[in-house]
Image 1 (cartoon, rainbow, N blue to C red):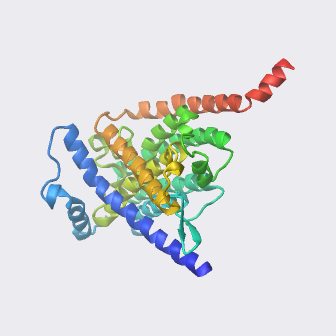
Image 2 (cartoon, helix red, strand yellow):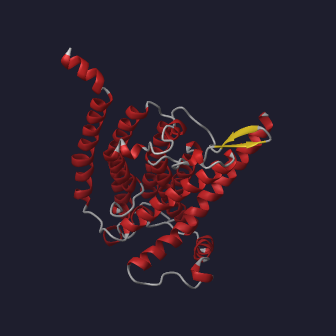
Image 3 (cartoon, rainbow, N blue to C red):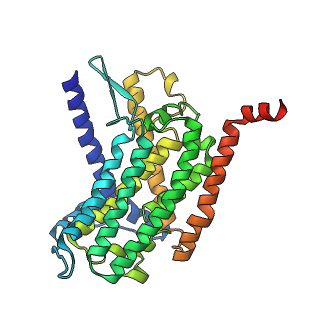
Length: 348
């Protein structure tokens, strides 16, 4: 039993790792196609049918480009920065439930690498390390524009992590657990948390844009001001790591929003289809990835629709709007959760 579970978990790790990298690679293709559609252009159409091999060509270009480390840069930290950004991006997927349970040879296996009872805290803890990868990369480049981009990114991520954390506090008050698996299981059928925490979801989604340095929050790599931002001096696969980490973070953020607020792998009438449990689990995973792809599309839609903010507008939104709204959401959630006790206290 122990060996079988270890083998299954090892296979699951490799499958999730492969899916994550594949989605990150083809998100670049999807983004260019969506941008082309929104701007009435064609987009990639040379590498393979409809340009579907464009990510392969881009990857080959990244691997074959000249490897450059600036003479005045700190070589060890220069390599550590993108490595840390990529590592933290890949570590977050281990606590996300990608599906329910499969029964193989009479043994149930969960489509979740590990179910931590503090899964939400684990996500926040790992994501908070991502700012070190950006800060180290910008500082070690010994380039003032890179350093300015790194400072912008760190200030932005720290600011928006506060509002994001406060939005999750309200969700935890509603669900009573930090386990992402338990939060998903509580949303069976139509009991999705978006119905109970619409303001919390809106705050979380806006903060996710800022955490991923996605437009309109991409001031850390604003080409018109910083010539590329914190990765100005990077080339080859070190630059590729930073770009891959951004798309992986977008994928994980989408999976997290789908899990916390939109039922995860749950969908209406899933238990009344009359199908075998394994088929229901597979359908649930397909539905889950459908929700994830919708949020990825939404990330890209916003990027090519809304212009970037000024930096003072970005910081003002985080500190003066989102944090007070998140605190108000916690207060309203507490009143709603304790409404019976409050009613008895007021009238008795």
